[in-house]
Image (spheres, rainbow, N blue to C red):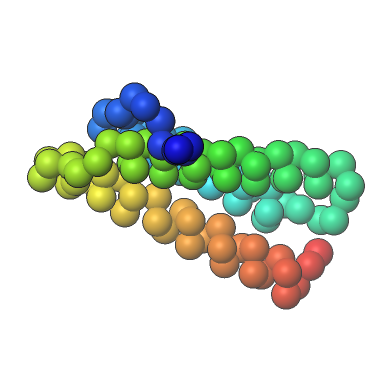
Amino acid sequence: FVSSVPLIKRDTPKILTDISTIGSDVSTLTDDVTSYNGSSSQTEPLLQHFEDLKSAIATTTSGVEAAGAFGGDESTSISSAVTDITPSVITLLVDLMNKVTNPS
């Protein structure tokens, strides 16, 4: 039996830090997308920042799964952290769509 869930449970503060990392990675990637002009010199950093975000999401997901059920206060804190970064995620998605439909 092989499991991708870590053997050590992660605590709520670590998960909140992971969510904050996602927010930071989203911000960095948004900056990359909005300034991207098709230059090959911009492509590698953009792709690296995409991979950073992908890794942060995987780490956070793994931590949440390993933590099991959260108590009321923990749930509220985590939900609030996700709600806080949601507008940035939406902005990134809109900027990506705009870049695809109106490349510059």
